[in-house]
Image 1 (cartoon, rainbow, N blue to C red):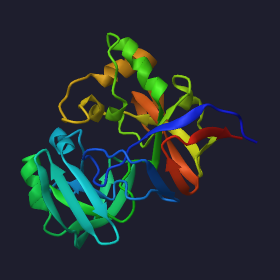
Image 2: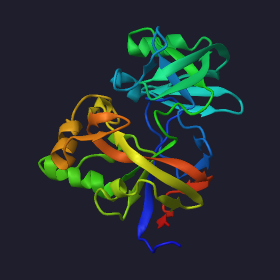
Image 3: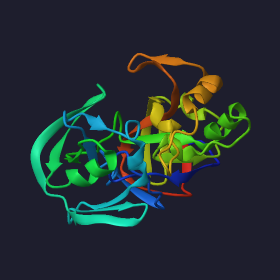
Length: 261
């Protein structure tokens, strides 16, 4: 049984390389493992620990396109194309994603110098065996929840892109997604089972275009929702939710979003 809804998909966000600038396509394809092409690659330091835009805001000024069929990765910076070439898999590696899950992959041979130059510290690029996400393959956030943060930001709007969520939903009540844990949600052709809340980090304090720290988002979330605690991730500031795929398919911007019992 489904319930009538005025909710729709208002924004889609993906990135080929975890931590780099987001792309906002008009549709995304979903498999049982998550979003096709999203976080297909990721960066690690010289100890093979994952690097994110929390650590290096400068990588948010780079954007990447990756064709998994040909293996060609194209990286653009503020001044244009920096490199376009095949990524050849080298030595295998396993990265511990913040104690949440292990992500396996292979070092991309010969690509480290580009990102090391940008980061100013030794960095290596990894081709993930599957999506390089922290907990689950899809994340969701209601635009009304982001809009409500403005009340705690001197009524200045808060750009929802800084939360780097895959699917933004319009038409829901503020924080409605917090009540969807364990429920199924249909987005276009795709059905997902909503999970728990996303624990936010300092990456959200960075401007989504420049990578500069410009807004104390964690304080805003704390003023709005307070500090929360979950058995899985402990105490912190939570905003948005994870979801697992039940029925694969395609999601378009503008697709109806319906809670399904």
